[in-house]
Each structure stands twice: as structure tokens, then as C-alpha cells.
Image 1 (tube, rainbow, N blue to C red):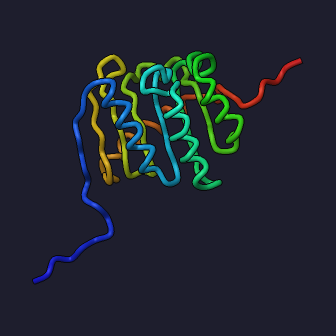
Image 2 (cartoon, one colour; image 1 turned 30 degrees about the vertical axis):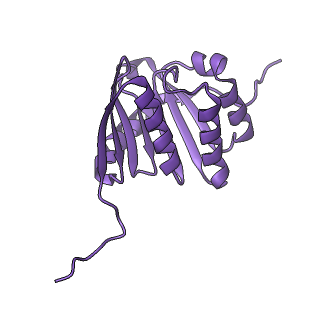
Length: 168
């Protein structure tokens, strides 16, 4: 009897460790994203977010389709605002597609950064100060818990970084 094939790929899970592996895993998630990227992090100070490579990867994702969305939830936004000029430029160019929020004080107990692409792929760093992580591709079942957590963190957040500065 012939085996039936499905369009859905089997989940691919990979345990990794180290800052270089973390940056490479972020690249992998961005490459797999087709419609939506959701990032939760303390402040984006780790993961190569200040680099031209990260800027180009995120720009490429956003340029693929006018409907693509990038949502970032951070505990602190100062690093983003002061040390990520390329990402600030990206925010100006794609202000319709990028949403950056800061968590309220009561939500700051979360200390395990993660990234979700299209509710199919994810990267989960188990603790902000420890570079042990899980990279999962084609795992819609595994992503559900992180998706729920992201939604909770987003609900406990408010918009924090904008493309333009308003004032008198």
C-alpha cells in the first residue's frame, strides 16, 4: 500500500546554544516568514538587531508583500530607540506594517525571548541571560503556546516607538 503524502511538512526541532546560534536561528525564522513575524524580547540588545544583516533580512520580509506585518513586544524600548538606527529607519519606511509595544510593569516577569513566524515556525530562547534555545520549523501545534503568550504580552502592552516624533 502506498503511503499518502501531505502538503504539511513534519516538524523540525533543533536544540541550540550560544549567541552565534541564536543569531543564525533568528535569520532562519525570518527566512521562513511569509506573512507575519512576532517578536518578544527584553530589549533587542541580543540577536544582532543592530547589524546591517538583520536590517536587510527584516526589510526583505516587509518588502515581499504590502500586507506583511512585524509586531515587536519589548520590556524596554530605549535600546531600540538609541542603538538600532537601521530598525528605526525601517519603522519610518514601513510604519504601516511595524508595531512596537512596551510591556506594562506587571508583565515584565517574562524573561524568555521568542519569535514566531506565520504561526508555523518559532524560536524560543529559554532565558534572556542563557543562550540555550529551541528552533522549530513547521510546528503549528508547538507554536500555539507561544502564540497565546505573545497575545497576552501584547494585551499587557502599549504602543511605544513610532516612526515620527510629535511635539511642539
